[in-house]
Image (cartoon, rainbow, N blue to C red):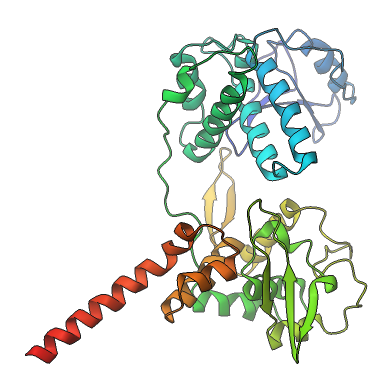
Length: 375
């Protein structure tokens, strides 16, 4: 959305997560826009705006410091603390990224009058202020829940470091209602994907690797020949999942996967590569590519974005393959411990989600059989 005549070329946009993004069209270049880090209410806005109009991007001054006692200060100090914990191995990088993103969205949310950022407000804000941040996400309740979770983690950490104790954020209701998460792939969907992505394609290699391992997307880009071993006459994949608390995993490789990997050098850095022949830099970059492969196979929906343009969204994911494998084990009578071993779960309660459904079905069948025998 363009903002008046006072700042020609300035556009206010909404990201997929619902936060505000400011972009400036370079003067004389209709198709080129530069994203700036602050909006019109910020004291440094004019400098960023004018530089962007001339095709330059200013960096935020490293000397800039948040207002003492503000939400910005809490966020900055908490993020720095988390970075140290990640380096020490006490916190996962994904947790850091999720909480940092949630806190940034909370801080960048504009106040109800639209004249300032919530990050500039004192951390001792009332419940209504937190409600305003939560409600700013609108229908994106999942993003709102992530933001709320990050705020609670930050305030819990801050209680011992001079920030408010017993903040109203802990009493705020969570707007998100879980819809069950990722959807397991059906046999028909798996066939459709493999029919579209034939032998020799990187998409097919990813699918077979994800299906064999039932692993998390966060580990797939790191697996390579170094994780391949032989146990007697069987080739297996062995690795330690990156998620904190996960147990080591070792699974046999299917003949289909071995065929796809045939010819790959033993010193190859990974199994999966980008179009440029390089390993994926992160799980996020792999996840983006996986969505494109899934959409290309026709496993998607078509929606309209804010501009009325059609956007395709993948309806399946790697986690859906993980769920499908777990359900297969449970349906075939596998124990909760088998599911735990495959999915690297350390908590039996998580694995029981998959086995209880089929255990109840089996018990119901046994009860019906006994009744028929009595008749």
